[in-house]
Amino acid sequence: MKYKEVEKISYIKEITDKIKFPRILELGVQKGNSTKMFLELCDKNDGYLISVDIDDCSHVSSNKRWKFIHSSDDNFNLINNKINEKLDLIFIDSYHEPNHIKKIFYNYYKYLKTNGICIIDDISWLPYTKFNVCDNDFIERINRLTFEKILNIYNSNTENFSLDFHFSGTGLAIIKKLKDELYPEKNIKNRLYTIKNILKKIYSPKPIK
Image 1: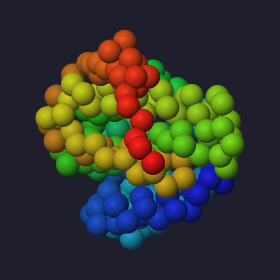
Image 2: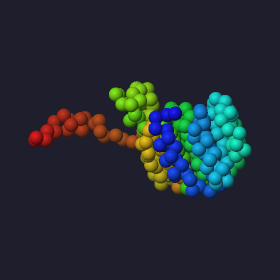
Image 3: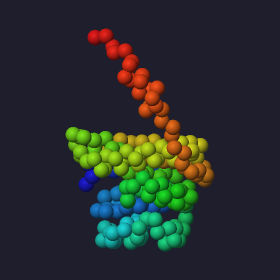
Image 4: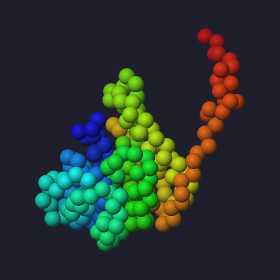
């Protein structure tokens, strides 16, 4: 399991438990930890789950409330035709690359109900920083870039969806749809590293001890 996966699954259960007749799209199955959690919710609240993975994960469950699609999640011609009704929940945990996440988010957002939730996994780079518990330079960089990509998308869509972050384990972005519109991302103008602010940092007076 991923770092602190149990805590994350518990949090997802907490925010999805009250959804009645849930229609869920899961992108990324692997060992089926989240799949089994969503199927428990579907059994409890009379729902249905569609899961997509590039690997064959059809062995994960035989639950009649589950449809598995063996495909890349950006095979939109195939997967879009399998979504027959609006979704209450989209869970993105497949190929963790910022532009891929952007591409699939923009495609599947239109299928999400108003007030529906999209959860994006692995947005925290903190566990992967140098000398930390999961020290990994590559994942630190990818998760940080994913986090920044989500902020850039939100920067142009503050009226269209709400955004929260949960930093247990490898982190979650929780997006709640408010409107159908979804505008292109807008990069955030960061003034932290302007010459002016760099000079301020260098020449700012040191506190007296």
